[in-house]
Length: 275
View 1 (tube, helix red, strand yellow):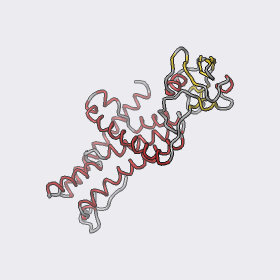
View 2: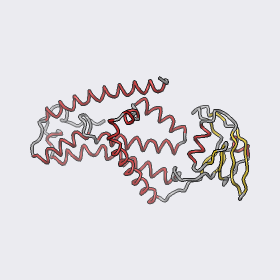
View 3: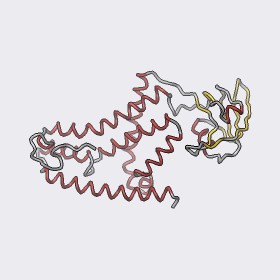
View 4: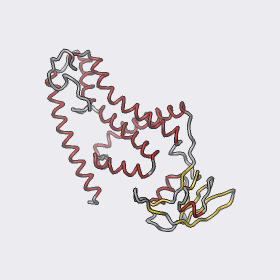
């Protein structure tokens, strides 16, 4: 949060917000959400360059961690997982979902190696930090060049923004409201992302940055979007809203948003304790 001089008080300050030109005010406010989107592009680009596309439809193992259950079972780089406990595997996310939720049960994993099917019995280990069941394998991912990574970062940021925009009508339904998470819920989701590894944490952080920028652009009092809407209103009508009225509306909006955050946080707590 950045407090701009003359925005909430001392409206007549010579170098204050309301003494600046219309477009200066517009771009000053828009710079905040824009920076959120730029950060997301950089983070997405970093993941594509350093780790590859996390959604590549592969089930091929890049490596088995030393001294891990997979290592001792005999997994090798290049093994392609085709089945786990009778379930045909088509993408890596299915592999992690099954292993993470196995509750320590011995898993029967079939891999393809040099044209032959080999069956392994693996007993996952519970990670002491994350609490997740793991066997110590990582997928092969295609890494991108710097320019290609940057372009992928732009595309993912744009696509995510589009999906968030189309989600707005759902906010007025029970399904949409149940999908909203407050600060406590976001902390829990961050913990889950961290458990998935550094790349997943960076990816999740990029999504959070986009969500912050998008939310801030909504024309709701106390958010940047409302200031932008007022600037657009002034540009169209040539009639600026008096600074005191603008500040009053923003103050009311701030109180309402705080109240909503409390309610959402309470719901997050109830969800976490299972009620």
